[in-house]
Amino acid sequence: MAKGPRVYPWVSISFIETLQQVYGMKYTVIFIILFIIQGEIFACKYSVRDVAFVNLDRHSYQLYYVTNKKLSPEQSQAISELTKNLFNDSNIQFHSVSQEEFEDEIILDEKEEIQNPRLVLIDQEGRHFSEPARSKNSVTEKELVEFLNSPMREQLIPRFLHVHSVVLLLEGKEEQWNKRAIEISNGSIENVSQSMKELPKKIANPPVLLRLSQKDQKKEKVLLWSLGIDKPISDEAQIVILYGKGRMLGSVFQVPGLTQTELSHYLNYVGQDCECELDRTGMKGVMIPLKWGIQTQAEARKLLGFNPENDFIKEEVTRILARGAKRSGKTIEKKLFQSDPLLGYSEINIEKRSGLTPDLSPKNESPEIVKTSSKFAHQRSTSDELNQDKQGSNWLNSALFVFLLMLGVYLASRSSISE
Image 1 (cartoon, rainbow, N blue to C red):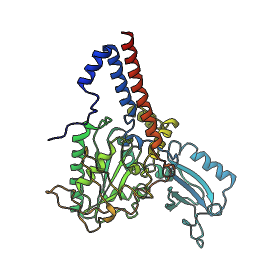
Image 2: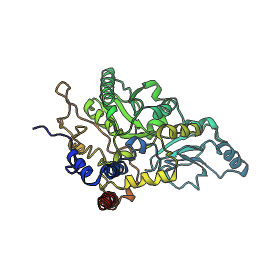
Image 3: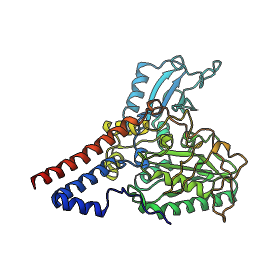
Image 4: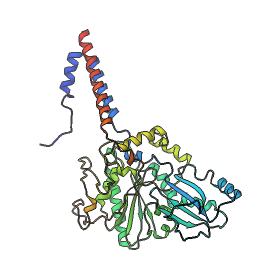
């Protein structure tokens, strides 16, 4: 016998009719309203995509202008004026320091003497991107802007607001893998597009595919570095999922390796309720370096229905992320998706996939082994240290429901007594 939708046995037509006969229509309606209210209260307020617009770490990157000697007051003043508003509304914090003041041994070899100024970008894991400044005397606005913006980021930012997610395809040297990557991406986008009407929270447009040619990859050094791509141009095609405020989901996927089924699973994750029993590790991926201007912020508030920059919203998101069970450093790659009958997910152990072919792909699709990086999007530790047991939240929800239920019974009882 096929299983029907889950219902509460005590909420049925016969039950409502009994309420109406015993307590009257007025208080039956009150009871039904209270039942609906509790459903709305416990409903998931934010989607995974919504959470990706909230940056709990205001500065995801630190940019240092390092010189071989301490700057004069005049030089410091000039740089201060130059950068005064440049890095506002961005996730990069700028510093101007001398080599003596700059004590990060990971970046500068002890024997290395800085002859010319350098610009050094550091992420939250201590990874660094370093290149020489173009002038011996100062730093120019143009070279600073390159850390904030690039041709591809100009295409990405407006799309983040209006589409489900972006599938970024980095073309490799082998054309056959580029074609295969396009097929996988378009097929996965089509799969997600067909199910978007069923999402808990409406998203106006489906995922889109953006392609980055080998030639254009040379102009995107900062962007690719932030995604963990140290070798920009490889033989294989590479795929990255970006969504929300430029947040990365999963790893850098390689083709051959990635299947359409698996990419579809990752894309489906973006539209789900963030407060349901999902692995929240995937909501903590790296954000690319970008400038999120005032107009972009205003448009995001309008489209999302809430202000991602609001401190109260950030507290809510912090609690949502903290509710996830502690995973001792495990990432979504190690435990990709829990079994979910609605989406058809099954648990996949990526760590043990080397040399194995999981039974995930359709029969007409050749099995492929997923190659993933050892790190999942350079996971941030901001919310990891806030992980707490979620019993407190569940207790509050249960108590509120019981209160509403008792209130309905009380009102119904008063109606019975008065009659």
